[in-house]
Length: 184
Image 1 (cartoon, rainbow, N blue to C red):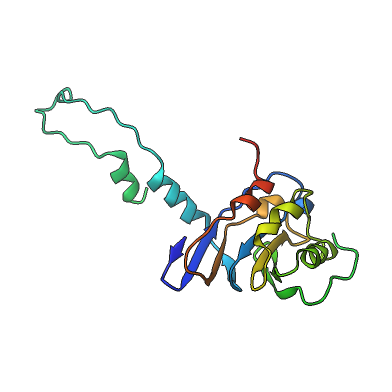
Image 2: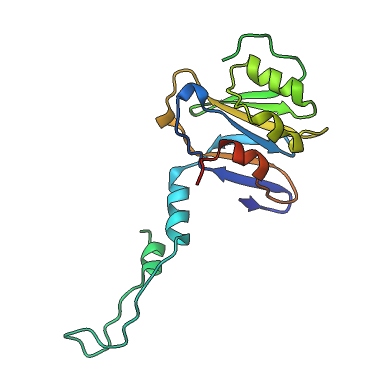
């Protein structure tokens, strides 16, 4: 997440295991977002810079030195660079984009049944648990971003995305996130 006082930009690395036809991602947002592709490199660098580093400190000088030999720690090394069938209801779709491997739709989130009907009629996969999980995020003035893979794309084509929207603070939709989470 990045926040500049007015806008939030979030980068999301989506992980999915299953058939491409059943890939779907639904994210509540407080405003109509700009949707784009992010990069795997961002997540590699973040992982390298934030993963725990364990070291053993030894106070004895290394063999063959006078005790002034210095080693660079791991942190310094990292820093060096180391399917729809019905007609969708009207008034739900705000915008539709094709971004990288995705078909992305920005939806009005003021009516849950109309939104779910639109997703179903437009070929977005809807897991059984989605109906109750979206409830806390459905209200007047709210939006959802829905993603699915374009017809010619495979699961291996899934790429990180970025969304930028007006918001006071970043947020993670925990209730909705658990619908697609793998048991840990």
